[in-house]
Length: 331
Image (cartoon, rainbow, N blue to C red; front, side):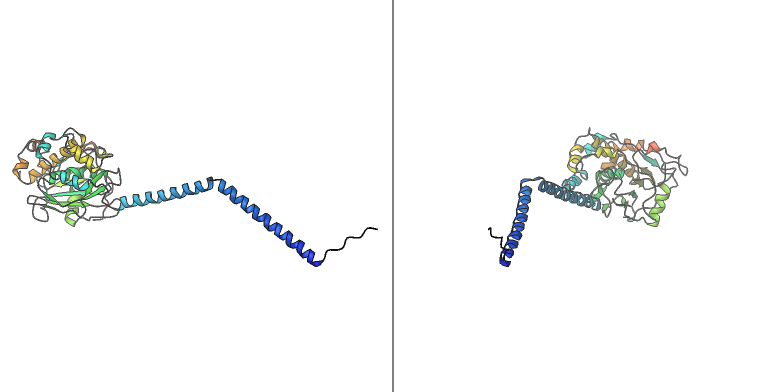
């Protein structure tokens, strides 16, 4: 007769349960090892993570760079200082060779009874109004700096890239200019972010309101605006800012040496028009500037002072490179 199976002892049951638990643990560990091996053998998750991190880092640096460029008037171009020295000490022969170049004559004569006071130092005043963001002001400043450097001396101006158009230039904000012939008053009313910069005095605001408006311009408040004492006004850039597209400061300095380049014909042509207008204020002083070619002939081409209170309103095509709209400051 066969023996019946004896029930397992408590110790045996505990051993069986322990073995079962160990098997489950071992099975779980094996699965984890398998997943880890599979993960190690599949490089895509790691590569994707790295690419995402790189993209995020690049994006952060891009945003920071844009903010710094926009908030700071200074550019990172190391050629700005040397180019400034170049444009403030140009060979008069180069200016003479260019003549008016391809610059537009945007001058408009003031009436004989125009009341424009002298500047803060008692000299005939050249008044400028512009803004850092303005692409037309970016172009016009080059000609202004070149022209005024024939009558006096600028301190080192801060390089600037206009937020509209990204054109390299220099800002007149906090600038210093000394001359024995003229006073230069510069107002940069707005920075690249639209924040208020320079506020005109009551007298400056009166002059701007009076002469940066019809009949002297086609619309009120256009920039860049220039007032040459009681003789001439101009609104807009004398050459297209697109001439500056993609150029560095070093590029400008190099192209100015070629009188046939668009840079030279625009910047120097505009500067010669301004020089002729300033010579009207200074009674043709200094003589080595005002009586040397081509300034006398350019003076003859400037609009003549009228006897009335003003001429007819200017057409829009008389100021092709100007920014119009609401003034960006509160007088």
